[in-house]
Length: 314
View 1 (spheres, rainbow, N blue to C red):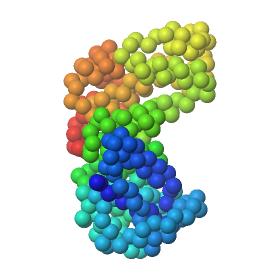
View 2: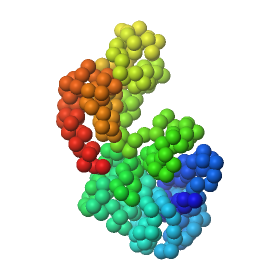
View 3: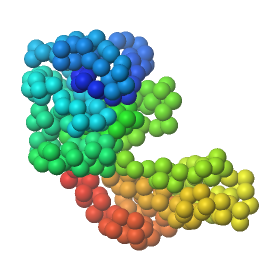
View 4: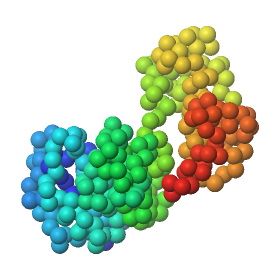
């Protein structure tokens, strides 16, 4: 049995506890209690940022777990952490297989020195503050989660679920992790290299019709995706579709589709070793040269540079 210990600092963000559902469903999927969950806090009793009080186990230097998950707070710099927390984290982490900071849980890990010399991420809003306060940490502000050896960190809120699913995949394999994601009604299990900033969120259409067209585009990026096809998906005429799409998203359909293709191509390049020709074909670019031109417009660097950078981060 793998023991998962949650460390809850005073004022912790309640969303961190939602990740317990991932391990709970993993137990159902395996048909046995593979994970045992326990919550800890300095002193035992702890309150969340919303005022909910919990009675947890007291965190001591002798506390043990296979994996420690450290929750964060909504305002990590305004509420000082318990002075003994960093020392305790350092001691319990030394005996654990791995430790993870959920969202701004990266701050207590950094204070304990557990992120020194390592790559880490956190909620994009707090990434700059994390880097400034802890200069020995290599902060990557545009990743949903990062595993650097035995130390994991995640971006905010829902990215915590992605990290928890990745832990399950590491323990029990990708097939079971997909089963857990399906049972949780998650659209997909996102890879850690994925950006915190989604093109779909950036476009943020106001109507269901334009959202349907974008969903159709994202699922069919390898196809030409003409305005006529997207208009049909939105149940609008091509002329009306182009006008409404631009009004709601601030972009033309062609520009939006290119953004979706760039996002998909970058993720594929960073997380696989597929040849550039395959990446271009699978994400809807005419050829490798066309994809390179789009990368230079969108990211200011070619696909090969993106792959090299991803290689150095692994």
